[in-house]
Length: 297
Image (cartoon, rainbow, N blue to C red):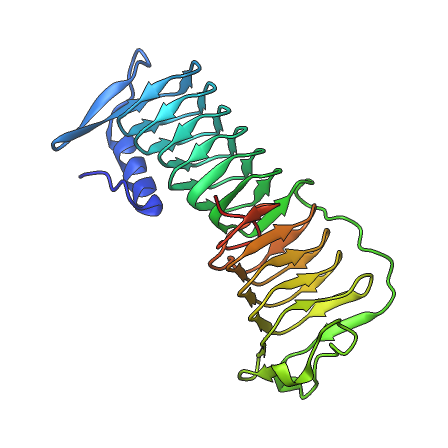
């Protein structure tokens, strides 16, 4: 058996299998695990000092914690909970518990957590951040792609900001309903630029900035060739794709995929639930392409 260092799901299963087959160390010291021409290191737990450097794959049965400025140049598997110190850099990270990625830390490729994944301010995942439970993003944190049942910025899991006072409704129905979106009040909107693409998708050849404090309810897929923005407290039931910037107001709820080629911004306490998110990424005040709002680096 070898270790697949390129795929998070395969790496997780192989690491679990190796730890099951490999006997525990009676003195709890790390052990070397031969892997053909390579080797990995097996540890019962890890609590390393600041500026620690490690170059081999690491399999940890229990909890993992590294000090500030540490570097791990091969994938790390953690069977318990994980805390990555600030300014640290890891190639890849797979965690079977909760995971906290510290201030300005970087994961070059992927981080995959079974529990909650907390990306602290300035932290960044170069390819994919995944959680089976929820992802929390602090200021300037993000990833190229985010996948989780719930993704939240700033606030706490389980709640969102209060929506603005209700002063009217702007609904975007599915084309199959026979109704046209009431975009007449949107500045710059031109009716000749919106067309239906099938039964569930509208395409707008321009930019849309939906007004506040109107409550926005988007029930269909929406493709905007320019930029798109919606105010605080919006409800987005389906996918949105845009060719420019994408801005979602605070306390909004999105149940579909958000994709943008330009800057994607989520204001505080936005909540994502339901389907995994699409191709672009998410991080408050960062630039994409991503799979939720954010900004690429």
